[in-house]
Length: 238
Image 1 (spheres, rainbow, N blue to C red):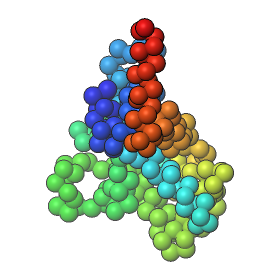
Image 2: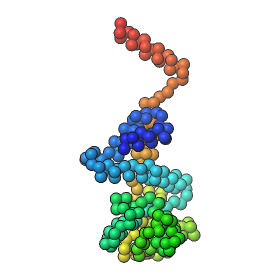
Image 3: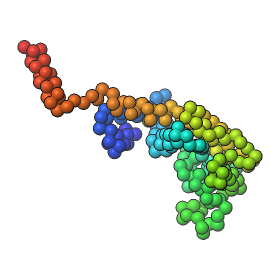
Image 4: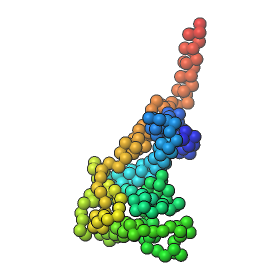
């Protein structure tokens, strides 16, 4: 994990306080109950990647949009293809191993109706997937509230108004996690402050750490400070 974090710090140009940045990220995502637990190392690494490239920028974007006065709705896709198959006693597809959880961008499969498409119209890597009725229901529900938003600028379904807009001081989001037998009239569960500690770590703590004790000086002042340092060292030596 540390090698990836180090490369990340270089790629994103953390030139000031780089060592502290690397140590902070590594410490935050270390599984401290047992740092040698391979399973939890992988899980924490997945969370690191997710927070870095998905959670942090999307949460910040939603906050800035709502802060500027735009009506903003945020959702988190928690629909798990492998978990639905396990619950129904169906062998999971190799494309959706159980350890991945809710895969990134799998909401696009639901949005574009992949569970309804004939195999020859699907992308090659999805042609062998056996779609279930629960997948079709999830796709129908997911695409319904997206259509509502496109048409009315409000994703709430006609018979349901439970999805509150994301606000600057009330970070509401909808957790979409359809399961077999669930009503198709409600898009999901309304929750608040999605991974707020992780978001604060990336958006507030790290930027502050970059500037911590990294005061710079003009070249002429820097040379004077260097001379004073050498003079003090000389006095101590004498």
